[in-house]
Amino acid sequence: MLSPAQGVLGRGKAVFRRWLLPWALAVAALANLAYPVYRHYDFSYSPDTRSYLRMATGRFDSVSITRRYRVLVPAAAAALAAPITQGYGHVWPARAGALWPLRFAFYLLNCLLLGAAGACWFNVARLAGASAGAAALAMVALLTSRWAAYEAGLPLTDSLYTLIFGLGYYAFRRGPGAGWALALALLLGPLAKESFIFLLPWLLWYGRRALPLSRQLPVVGAGLGALWAVHWAIDSHIGAPATESVTNALAHLENISYSLHRAFNLKGMGELLSIFGLYVFILPVAYLRARTTPPSAQWHAPLGLAEFLLLVVVAIHMLLSGDLGRMGYLAAPVACTALALVFTHTRQLLRATAQA
Image 1 (cartoon, rainbow, N blue to C red):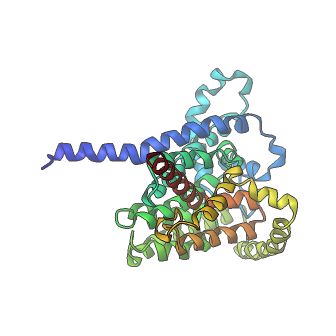
Image 2: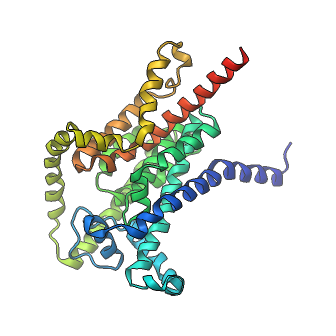
Image 3: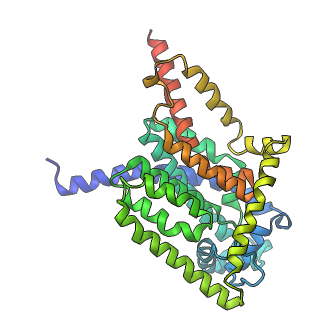
């Protein structure tokens, strides 16, 4: 029988292997990949980034209503920038401008958040049956996406929303013991992005094993209450009418026809393929090859209706946003699991062939 000290040590090692190690690997990959984006990006091409920089400095009056209430990441970046400012100019005197420390804070924070999302992807792949090496390889492969570089390197809030998708899918895969992940997703989701409303039904239904519905609803209420409080505070501060949010939400319906038209031309197809890069071609090839194996031995056997419906939720985000590639990256938890399963089955097949 293990002593209490041995039990604590064992749990600590498990947390290190399952979470800290993949998180550190993901952050290291992102820090390298996203640094040139943070350093050299031309902000004139991105009104989103300029809006979040303004929000981090406490200015909301000229920020688009679409982004105005996503305050968590800008507020955290502003808090992180305060100590960074003290020494930033001494390390990089050529970049002593007021916004450089704030941009660096966004870069650090987004690397940490997206790295946490990567750790979720690693764990869901393991829970689906992938080997540790295959799960790590798939995670790093998806972190090489240009959208990961943008999310980590620029003053954006997408990293938090990507993490929420990862937490929700992890809660579904893990079930009992993952209530904390689902609670975080339900609490932070409303403030991360308004389109969280489309993910919410999936979380409530497929998160029941992790957290019973009776315990989910108070957390959702707290998240929505926080969103209402933020709306009220900002609208009161800048004198914006409360109905403006409803009008803006309805205006997003106009993006559907634009998104469909864009998805079916050559440029749009190229953007879709760029979400996960050339790795996306592995999945259809592996699926066709798996048709000759028994159903129980096929790599995609652990994937089912939950994954399909989560991809439908991602598709809704893509259609309403009009930004196909950026929103499509929200499918990373499912894509990472699928890739990791392919890598695992390929390795097993090669090993069996070598032993034959």
